[in-house]
Length: 146
Image 1 (cartoon, rainbow, N blue to C red):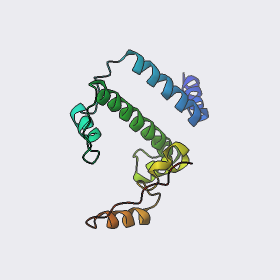
Image 2 (tube, one colour; image 1 turned 30 degrees about the horizontal axis):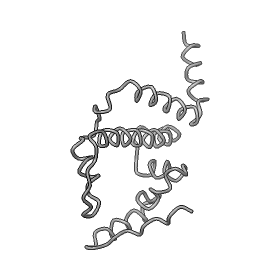
Image 3 (cartoon, one colour; image 1 turned 90 degrees about the vertical axis):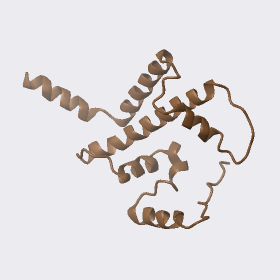
Image 4 (cartoon, rainbow, N blue to C red; image 1 turned 120 degrees about the horizontal axis):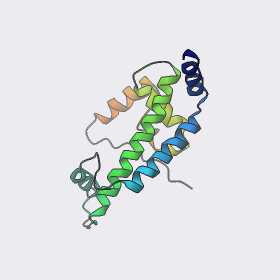
């Protein structure tokens, strides 16, 4: 019986981040195909309000748009949390910290747009906090992709 438990532990240790991500996306795919998209963990009225926050533009959105964006945001948050959790597991801790999220952001090219929002170390975070407390401060926009 103890041998079976040791095999499971070894399999967990041999599991790579790529395996976790592939399994995650397979689960997401199955979930999206079978779920009612209007059943989002995010409140759809707030998602709709965020969509309409675009500086005075008057436009209408279809009824499905907030639901679809809500599910997309859920998936984004789950993947980022999973990548941060891998950092927690590597250091044998049980709590996700800002640094874990920052490492996940900096280790994945897909999250480059978050580098200014999630600075990698404490001093940069304090500087960002000090700047954003200045009335009228607008953070620099990211360079457009070429």
